[in-house]
Image (cartoon, rainbow, N blue to C red; front, side, top):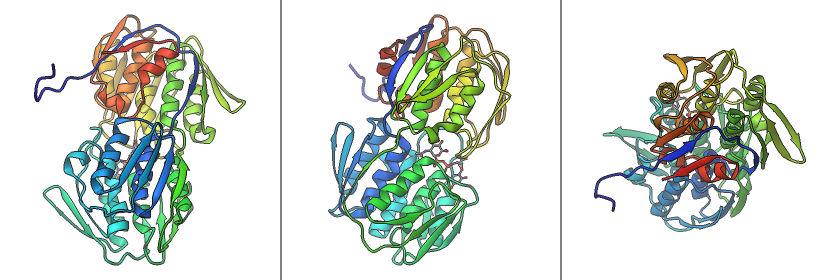
Amino acid sequence: MQLPGVLLLSKYIIQGGREINGVIRIGGAKNSVLPIFAATILSGRKSIIHDCPILKDVEIMIDILKVLGCSVKREGHTVIIDTSGYIEYEVPDILVRKMRSSIVLLGALISRVKKAKICFPGGCDIGPRPIDLHLKGLEQLGVKINESHGTIYCEASDLKGADIHLDYPSVGATENILLASVFAKGTTTIRNAAKEPEIGDLQNFLNIIGAKVSGAGTNNIRVEGVKSLNDGEHTIIPDRIVAGTYMAAAASTGGNLELQNINVEHMQPIIAKLKEMGCDIYFKDGSMHITSPKRLRAVDIVRTLPYPGFPTDMQAPIVALLSKAKGTSIMIETVFENRFKHVEDLICMGANIKVDGRIAIIRGRSRLTGANVTARDLRGGAALVLAGLSAEGTTVLDAVEHIDRGYEDIHLHLQQLGADIVRI
Ligand code: UD1
């Protein structure tokens, strides 16, 4: 029986030492689905979105859309969203605090209902995650912003295209400004825009429903304001971070994996590092194959950077791999502060890692040993799964709900690939 007010957390029990082998199909990217769901609000029509992963964050976004007045129906991995009815401008605090990326609703609501009220968002605790760049960009489009007691109020009776330069290529700020500018009069240019593949996916969806956006994937995105949008149907791009995590699972256990539904271009920063570590990676008949050596090699320096640099979301999984690689590696986290929380748990498992600010020095050990550890955020939790798979003995990983935010049934997929992992 669940006691009132007591949160019962799930665990993974992992018996390490089994190779990860076989075939896996990669599903749609969480970081694409969330802004694209927000974008459906703009159209006031029906959107059919395929390959939407079944994840905690995605379900929270669906709940928010329903509360705002959208009609949402999930049929397996397809989600049908009808936004033709009345749309509320106020996003409930309780749902926003569960997911930081709900901030992308700001741009969508400003576009559709010309006002928005949303509290400062929650999400993974990986350091300060300000939204100053989002707000500065929106103001340049003519949005009036008031902040008080942790709530942001926005109003925009007359959105006008603007030339906006981002001080940093923030993914969320690029998405919010892009969404807010779809109906803005004239041309909007977002300079120093984020180039992540998920921005390209958002551009493609917006253009399918009738927007005029170009330049995603380059430094400058250009939006020509339109007057109305249409129905649309779209398939989400494969999740490059989920793919990278399964590749890392194979690499950490000396296994071989075939990955289906992969966009090779999006995977290049991850492929380059896994190759340096000694993995053989090739493409055949539309699939990607990874074969890993008995023991991985250390890499001199890995530096997380905005795309096409090495993704910060793969930092924790790669640190787990480097803990057992031959030699010493340096990981520099340049994107987020406070993103080395998994290190403490890896050390409990026998890893030799020293962290100084944004730098981790990892001296590879020949073995890790199972321990009782805790997932503290999404990607850090995934890293501990990888460490558990390659460790000797039993790992008990607590608070795996964090992992549910970004990986659909990871333990079931790993079981099918040969892992000894159960959820309790
Ligand atoms: C998105 C991804 C997240 C990924 C990150 C970087 C989603 C839902 N999440 O997060 O998985 O790790 O990109 O690739 O797509 N910053 C500011 N001011 C701002 C905005 C950002 O200083 O207004 C800083 C942040 O604190 C951070 C850095 O910029 O240090 C990068 O943040 P950003 O690119 O905005 O990441 P998110 O959109 O939050």
